[in-house]
Length: 152
Image (tube, rainbow, N blue to C red; front, side, top):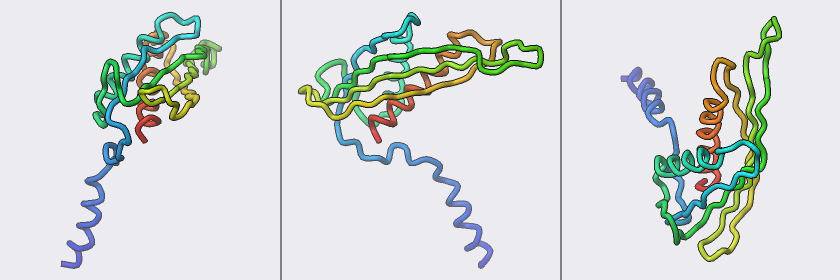
């Protein structure tokens, strides 16, 4: 019996691995404005925007509406850099690093500001992959960060 009382808390503690979704969200709905790309890398705005939409839907804590949301999120992609990150012993590029900076503006539907923040994220990707593969990975990371910042 004592052994069971010792093992039971250990087994039960492994059942809960995430508190995501338990946070009370202050607002009922959000409109996400199409992202604005201020960099020379074409197409970032569409990839980052769609990944962010998908992540809000996947999260499900706030209703996503096309217009008229209780809150509005606007995002400007202000900086993008893709450069070699690591080299092998023959000085061939092994990995690249992509850095991105975004300016986030979160406001009420009536235009009253709630907050403005700068988000910086980066990823590395192997040289055997394409830059587009790296961008997709970065867009997934950025979208997770945006949802976390907005909802928590």
